[in-house]
Image 1 (cartoon, rainbow, N blue to C red):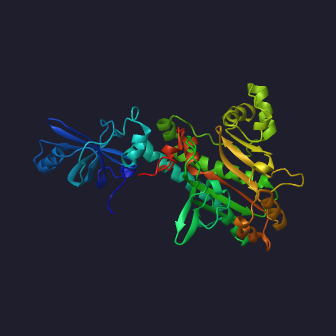
Image 2: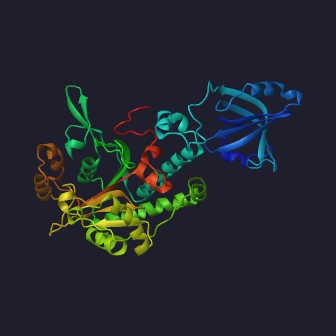
Image 3: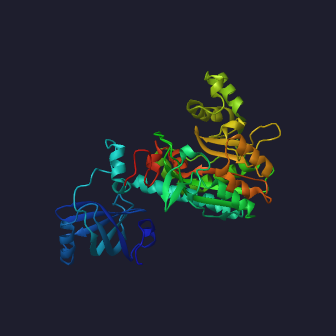
Length: 439
């Protein structure tokens, strides 16, 4: 392809270039025509002098051209200090209209201040044209890329696990049932069991980036019925501290790379800064969090609620983490074992060997050392009332399995927090919730 992306144009002054994109705007003046062309990397001005006889055909094309049509332009790139848009312009020799905008847009995606979110989601193909949205998904993509990069550098193997499962294994009330030929199947809540199967198989370290499904009728800014999860599991750990340390290092690595590539643009477009954290991240026991929230900020809850972080307590941990540790991140440990999954390890005193990671007042991860000893995990499953549904999973541990641990991060929630977006409805390419199954 001869097409040059608009962000690359500065390398081609004085040369003939071919560019393609959307018509962002058209200005048709008495003596001159201007097109602002937009692609996923930027914008450029195209200038047509009407008085030049050779431009007669181009002038006719622009006379009939509407914004949001797509065009292919060949011309000479010139330095133009008086042009406010990047100090350059293209003087075209050819304009080809590759598609036409056939009517009025459902809404003005360049000014969404008065546009209902549902209207935007109903017409997501238009909503996604905004510079902000294009950049958001570029940032999200690179966030995933840098976390992947870190794991590949640490000898992780990327796997792909099935999303159809034969039993409602983790929590039957939170899975979607589907017809699977002559029997029932379910959409997987997470790849948890299969990650651990890979560990039992001797893969060492594994990860997956894939969709997960939760049949929860939750209508909040943080929940979705389908979301993208970044899951990993790794072998031969000594404690869940190893899991926390790896997560902290991975996130620090990714955020540092994102800051170098996007920091200034994110601050300008989203009004928020990327703060690159320092390792190790601070950690506190759940009981100590509640104690400090009460002493510092007067936040009190009944003891019956202190088995987990309440929504308000979770929000306040951001202030606590900043005031106490000057950190946006906080690991919270020592949750009651009966409130967590049966495959999370307990120590000899019954203390859960797991954690939540809170970032900017929102939980982004539940992680743990997993129970890898067959007798213990069978005992844990029995205590939760689980039997035949998890029998296949318990078999993974019958014939030896390394000590291991892992965690999962919701990509959409991570993006929401990074860019200070109000809801995961906006950070998902196409949101799926209790009341939305289209487009």
